[in-house]
Amino acid sequence: MNSPPEKSYALHVAGKASGIDTLKLSCEKQVQPAAQSGEVVVQVHAAGVNPSDVKATLGIMPHAVFPRTPGRDFAGAIVDGPTALMGLKVWGSGGDVGITRNGSHARYLTLPVAAVREIPNGITMEEAGAVGVPFVTACEGFSRAGGVKAGQTVVVLGANGKVGQAAVQIAARAGAKVIAVQRQDMLEGFACKPVEVINSSNTDVTTRIMELTGGQGAQLVYNTVDKVYWEAGHAVMAHGATQIFIIATKGQTVPFDLFKFYRGMHNFVGIDTLALDCVRSCELLNELRPGFEDGTLKPFPVASTDMIDLPNAMMAYQAVLAGAKNRMVLKP
Image 1 (cartoon, rainbow, N blue to C red):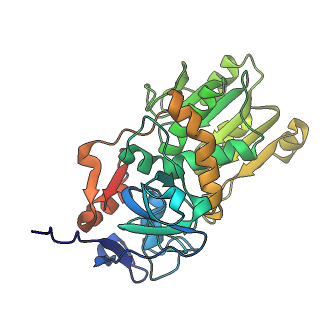
Image 2 (spheres, rainbow, N blue to C red; image 1 turned 45 degrees about the vertical axis):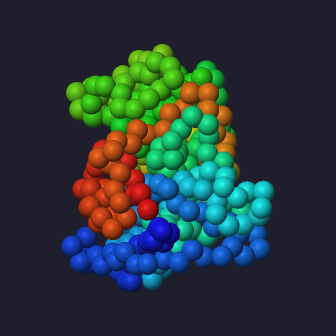
């Protein structure tokens, strides 16, 4: 007897909601699409849920269009496209995926061929599906800042967040001296070399960083938490240093010492990953691939309790919006 055909679904968001309680997130049947020239169809095995995914479904992201299927990150296998790629296990992400085009919270995802790369050896589908946005953001930040180099001092503000954890890993792998600033004593996540941790809830951040750097300050400051650490971040920039920002709440302002900026020959870099399409995001993931393969970078751990099937996606969305510490992963 033939087995019944496997059911395929995709999440569907019809329009903006006023809040998570009014979000209409439906799970609809999906037929496997056919790849056009220059495209691949990925059968999604795992798809991370990011805060930006949830915010986009709520209409907070100005770029997001409706209706669509949300989801930026994914890992899966190619089931249609160029013959040479059939069956290849791939991963990817994108500021357009799930925002201005149908995304990864579905059984099938159609993308340009250039938007997928083979998953690194040694990590699981679930782990690969959860790497995306945090590591892409951290990598693009360092890239825009001219790269992170051995011997530099890198301060990561908000190191316990997912982007912060990724930035710590990338900087440590590059051979930098990493100072992680957060509101706890223990480093959360992985680093391939020792990291100095500053608990900002009981330590003066500026004073301690200047002590650790012999009064010179840091060459790179990665600010992942908006204005909370603005003054400290600005104060510890060495001559010619760069500070990277990944988030800013609309309408908020900070006091800016223009003279210090001028005399310090400082640089400020803003990173908006929604501006990075699926092809650029995949290029960044490919840059990180050797680190995941040699073990100097580690994917975020994904527990079985953090893996949610697609019909129960609302549970994952609610958890992420509530500030879940773990990476939530949908399993289509």
